[in-house]
Length: 107
Figure: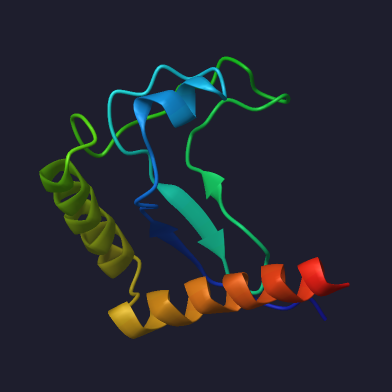
């Protein structure tokens, strides 16, 4: 039987125009990440991939200031809430992902 996994949106604080440029994206603000329960890491939502190179990223802020980060987090919280997730749910999902990544790095 396939395990049912929750997913949530998350804003990684360590984003910048330069860090996105390294991936070939001209980011104008924070890009939300998708984190899947018990799966290592995250992926940027709507970020171009090899399979879909023309997909455009979308941004939940204008710029990368501390205020922009807070605004992006607020949108993130609203999106997660609209999916029925509490702050605790989001914390559990993110922690499970981090633990999976840690365990895989030790293998």
